[in-house]
Length: 355
Image 1 (tube, rainbow, N blue to C red):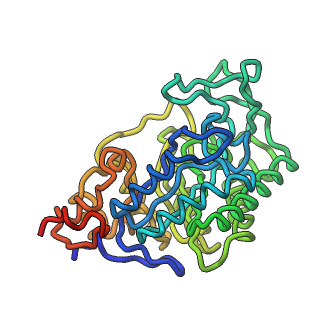
Image 2 (image 1 turned 45 degrees about the vertical axis):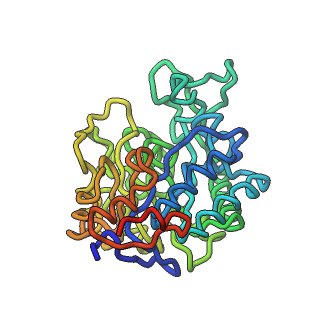
């Protein structure tokens, strides 16, 4: 059997293979509620054979949404439909995770297909909060710089959302600390200009993510995994970089985090990303080797052979597919065929299996 289709254990959970579905915003919710689209979208990828499915960035508060169409988990009423999703995914022997998120200063935007621009408070948007008052784009509405009371609310929101995630049947939580959203806005020295205990030094800039981890763990059982997604670099001079990512990963490992999901970018609009196939894999490899924590590779990984090489050469422990999984919900089944692995198909589909 190829390495890509070997099992891997995180706490009490066993993934049937090393293929995961990366959290991808669908912008298809109303008032944070999941609907039948999400059941079909995530359920089809479970039928398709992925070992792990991580639900899209799910806002821990209404003001934490990127758009008004984001998924949410800030009230108990959200749980019922989410439970339908988790039940279906688990019935096909995939592990179901959820990414808990807060957009910070990148909140209150249009959906991408409607332009993706910031919606001002005068036009029906909402006031955003961040580590800074400075907006992402010059000329747009500034954020409110979080005070200590506001930070306490963020921590409480993550804890409450984690408790609801457990009730809804999720088996894994990923904290979103990447892509220029709230936690990343504290991590990056290009964004965080604070002079208090949450600013300036590395130790102060990582304080929020460490406190969020602690808050989530108060509501999340020790036998279920906890992942953190980071941007390994800002792709901008003077910003968050790989060296700081390795230091943070080492600290998070000591705090009981099970895996670092290694993405990059998003903190500032002047970033210069070196896009090419597997361009973020070296981050996953370096963080894994230097910190000893498990890592996930993501970013322009599009075929079975590429993923197999990443796992077999120990560059990462799992591979998360994003756009390729949108193109092909059954990528794991097709990848198994390419790599000559005879995996179990859903019984409903077995008559189509080529011997």
